[in-house]
Length: 393
Image (cartoon, rainbow, N blue to C red; front, side, top):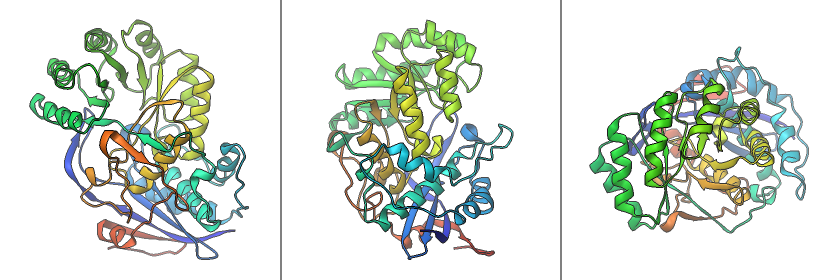
C-alpha cells in the first residue's frame, strides 16, 4: 500500500492554565498534526511537538522538513501488510527507515517532524488492516497509572496543586524547579502537604551547574525525592558522570537523551540512572523502543514522559507504549487531555481519572477518533501534502 496525500495542521490550542518551567512558559499547545491518506482512502494521524532547546526544531522548520523531505520520501515507499505476534521493533523499524535521516550538522535533529510522520503512517497502516496498536505492542496490564506535574510558580500555588492531587489520589508527582532557594522550600512545602506516601521527583530542565546540582541533590534527599531530572544542560558528559557519582539521589536524563547515540553515550559514560523517553523527542515509536531496549540491557531505569501540550494522538500513543513497557517504566506522564487543553481533538476522552488511572485504548490504529473540525478550528495554518499550495484556516 502507498501513501498518496495528506495535510499538516499547525495548531494553537489554549491551555486551561499556563504551564511553566525553567526553560519555557507556555499558554497554549503548539502541536502539529500530520494526516496521511493511503491509496485506498484510509486515513491516519500523527503528531509532533517541536522544542528548539531540545532538538533545535521549530514548528516552522519542522513543517518545512516534512513538506520537502519526509513526505516526498514517504510517497516512494510501498508498505507491506503489518504482521502481529512478532518483535515490535521488527514491525516499526522498516516503517521508520522509509524516512530519511538528515540532521543539520548536529544542530537540528528532526525528531518531532519524524515522529509526526512515522506515527501517522503507523496509524494509517494499522487502520487499513483494522488492527489496534496494542495488537503489536501487547499490553502487560489493562490500565496505565499516570503522574501529576506541578509547574514553576509560587509556593502557595504549588501547595494548592499538591493538595488537589492528593484529593485525586495521585501517588506520583513531578515538580518543576529552578536553581533558587525558593525552589527547595517549594518542594519542602509540597512534601509537607502530601505526606510521605506520595512519590515526588523534580525536574530542573538544565537549570544548574555541577556544584549547584550536587548541592541541591544533598538537600533534596532529606525530602525523600525519587529522582532529579535534567539537573544540568545537555552536553559535557564528564560533568554528568561526576554528578551521578556524587549525587545523593538518582539522576534522570531528558534533554540530554534525544537520539540512540545519546543513549549509548550516557551509558558508556555512566552519566545517569534514568532515561526519560518521549515519543516526539525521541523521533517516533521505533526509536523510543530501541532506546528503551538499550536502557533495559544496561540497567537503566525508565520514565515514559510527554511533551507539554500533546493532544489525544500522542496521548494515545503514549498509553500504548506505557502499557507495553509497564514492567520497565517506573513513572508515566501524559494523557492530560481536557485537564490541560481547552478542547482536545478526539471524540473519546483520553485524560486519566482518579488515582491517575486510565484504561487501555482498544480501537483501530491508536484508538482515538480524531475530529477534523477541531483540527480546523485550532489550526492557524493548514498545509496540503502532495500539492504545491498551502492555505490558511
